[in-house]
Image (cartoon, rainbow, N blue to C red; front, side):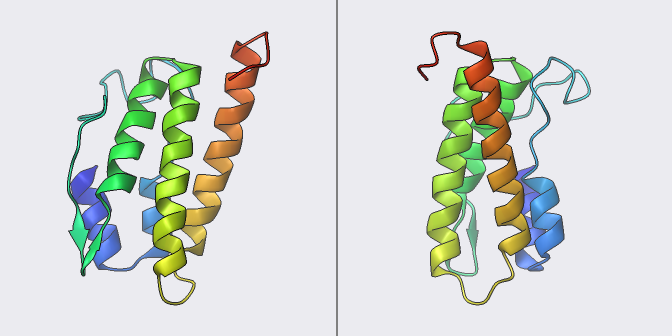
Length: 125
């Protein structure tokens, strides 16, 4: 996924970036039976045109790993980190070319929050 994200960012293809940042739903089959490479708090670097996208990549890997493991709480936590990292980069980007990716990330965060709440009967996440 790192290389896919790198290529999408270098080409500034907003829909391809959005597609790469999509996370499958929680289940042990969303990745074709294979866990995503990386994850579990790995620290990857991804410099693109003078901007460090590593925090976005790392949070995506963590969220994807949590989705693969069917861990709703960790999925939400990692997706929230992805959302924050992306917002930081979005705020410093020029133009609106990242809006489609922002929409995808917002939808993913919303879905993750709903699933985490449903999996936690006390309502405290």
